[in-house]
Image 1: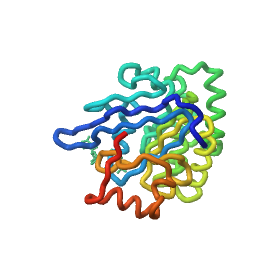
Image 2: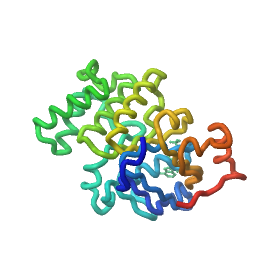
Image 3: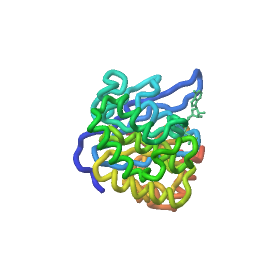
Length: 250
Ligand SMILES: Nc1ncnc2c1ncn2[C@@H]1O[C@H](COP(=O)(O)OP(=O)(O)OP(=O)(O)O)[C@@H](O)[C@H]1O
């Protein structure tokens, strides 16, 4: 897939987050044009979730600003949210509800008309392959099915931007394969940013990699550029090694 046009759908501008003296992320800037599928790569604790939570409007940055589809997530929160599907790392899922009840609940909360909601539930149920578990309490579903419920929830209002935090963590190989197939389909019409610390994920789904280490962007380019001179594993090691970390200004 290539850039379909230059409209920026996800924009991080000078984002920093400080917890007292601890710097979770510092001066993170990047923009994602419409239609691009981007892997947000980095080791544990690098700042992926922090950045994504800020982009989704769930966490206020200490410095900087974020936009979704041109709308500032702090100043025009509802407009930004209308364009965004956010899949956080672990939920939020109501464990006593069935997937159907949960989708109904979130759809009503988003103000979808009953007829439209019915159609959207059918569409996302099919996309996330939830048919068999629609009436089972979410608390009794496997990790893979819960992940799919989260995906269905994120897609319910048909957003054009998807932000997903480690969407394949805890899934078995078959579930990962199904998930990647879904991303391929979704990536044809949506702008996607997904975080991962799994290298194979990058080449399987993304046309661009943004690499974060210790809160700073250290690489922004194609998967091919990331391992142009070495294997992906070596590139990962190099970018996370304290002595050789290089910063890419953007
Ligand atoms: N509320 C908080 N108070 C203090 N430190 C925090 C808080 N939230 C996150 N951090 C720290 O900020 C850093 C970045 O965390 P973040 O969750 O963004 O990393 P991550 O790249 O998503 O990691 P992982 O892959 O492990 O989920 C970590 O060192 C984390 O411990």
